[in-house]
Image 1 (spheres, helix red, strand yellow):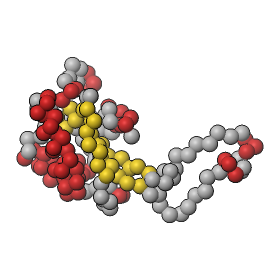
Image 2 (cartoon, helix red, strand yellow; image 1 turned 180 degrees about the horizontal axis):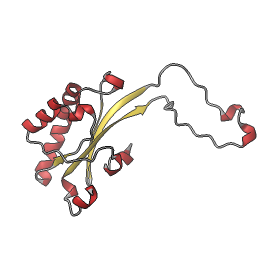
Image 3 (cartoon, helix red, strand yellow; image 1 turned 30 degrees about the vertical axis):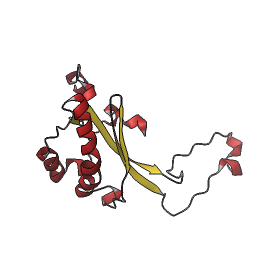
Image 4 (spheres, rainbow, N blue to C red; image 1 turned 120 degrees about the horizontal axis):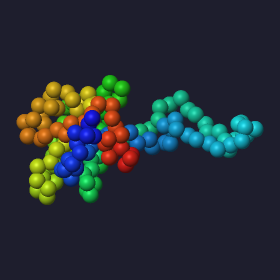
Amino acid sequence: AWAKEKKGYDWEKVIWSDECYIYLDDSNGQVFVTRRADEEYEEDCLIPTFKQSSLRVMVWACIMKGKKGPLVVLEYPGGKGGGMNAAQYRDQVLGPVMMPFLEEMESERGKVEFQQDGAPSHTAKSTLKWLKERHIPIFPHPPSSPDVNPIEPVW
């Protein structure tokens, strides 16, 4: 239904955004080894594990059709589950990074829309109020649908 509603949409006027963690020590748990059944415990088929947590940084980025937006390394958010709260999102992303990019794109393309997923910091009342006060239209993103965000393959 969402895709049918968007048929013929002017995709050049949507800023697509997302955050992700980048693991600095290659220990995000996604390690694949090709081996035969009898090689299960051979040293070159094993990867040591450690009890300490992985080294990672959170980044935010945005793109538009034919244009890479800024990529910013976020200060350690430390929120519930390691995510960022609404104030951190506004202070580290929306104000200093997204707004200048949006203004630049509007000078080139006319009025644009801003897409963000349903993360709590994005949907917080204070965030939505901040965006509304600045007359930034939000592009409606279907819930639990990262597959429709073209920035996902960038990660």
